[in-house]
Length: 502
Image (cartoon, rainbow, N blue to C red):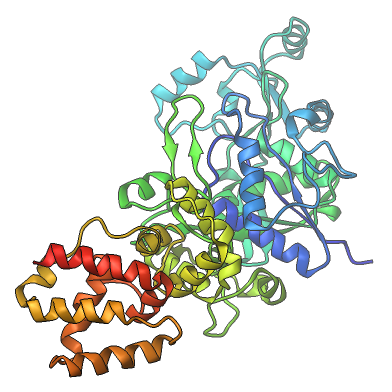
């Protein structure tokens, strides 16, 4: 019987959600939905020293914004809970004890000071095959002393005992055959002195308990794979081990290393899905949402970082991604992040989205900027006129401002050198005869006819007309703008601009 697809996104609640984390969640989600499977959110909060208040709620909010909400989670519940590792603490020690009983792990009593001293002696010190015999652990101490230390509750950790001279191999669905020499892998801590498991033990125990079928995670976890594979084997679960999928890194724009928050700060673009405010420092880190990205565009661009469907198509909705996604088309190589390309995706989504679907978000942005909109029909008209010119949803504020308030300043320098009293007279006459019953093409023709009647070439009057209406040399078709504003508003703006030009 084929194993039911169950995948998990397992972030730590330590701060903002990096776009690489969202992509991991997305690929898990796409794979689950494509196979009628289950997408799980599991919060890996065993490291209490790094826990940040509000981070879990933030992660849930980011996933909801992206439209990739989990089927099982701390919020929704499910048959395999609890979904926070801190709430599963009681389940882990039995596995650590089993590993010790079977000779696959050992107690280590080394104090933090002793470990620091070793690291000062050798900068590349690792606790493992070549060093464990010189440390204070149950492999080197007499059994009676070990029992006495345990009985007196002496602080200790439990470490995996990596075997000598073994090759741990597995098949990764992206990378194919992968092997690790156990001589080069540390004896990682499995259970900490406070009784909490480390990632290594908890992730294996929870993946087994939650019947996870496929593990999608970032390439940075590849060095941990031999530890996890051995734990599946040592705990007697090797036949139930999930399939491995290590996703390529998202790289800096120059391709030189993994993209970090620091890179985003340095280069002027976000790397978090949504705004994140550090509760300790109050520092705000901007996110894609607040910058003005549509969630559809954000999901689309993330999917294309390391994956394509084999065609030249670049724009995919979430349902289309679910239909077309395949692990076989995920690249082994890292994907460079290009913010200009990210904005291209967003522009394409804004351009192709109906005005009524854009309106709620645009209204919210306007409200944030103090621009109250009371006429939805008018706003729909404005959105339709300017959406082709917007890369970000926040661009609507700049592009639409003149539709809601007359320009406070005019680009006088663009007009004044060739401004004449005759031109002023033309615009006064034109504004008095503006006919709202005509469409944009008819308005343009009437404008040209009147220009010729007044002895002007139509082209030399177009720029002044645009500056009069919007304040500068920008905006959609000037006659579309004029129709949206209406005859009375046009007359007032022409009058104000004429004063500025004279």
